[in-house]
Amino acid sequence: MMILSTILVALVALEHVYILALEMFMWTTPRAQKAFGTTRQFAQETKSLAANQGLYNGFLAAGLVWGLLHPNDTFGYQLQLFFLICVGVAAVYGSITAKKSILFVQGLPAFAAILAVVLANL
Image: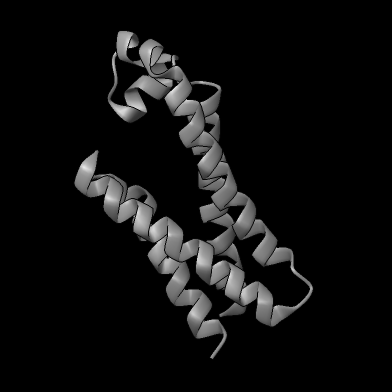
């Protein structure tokens, strides 16, 4: 179970690095516009806001990686759990306020990782 939890946490971290890239560096590209359902004009007008959002996604990814690499297993577990819960809360909020698919795209992996991390540390 420990290997599975490590893989799931790493996947959630990678997903948030990808979101960081989309929001900070690719926001005005057709790829990001399709992913977020925006128009070219909206993307241009909100470029700095999206970069800020991307930075926060980077912090989530950094926290998850920190939890995976921390030499103290107990503290690493706590870090992973905290940052996964942050991702889960953000996914629920995003699904209510922005786009329902966020719950599945970001929330489902986070909730699966939470379950695996908790079970691996019983």
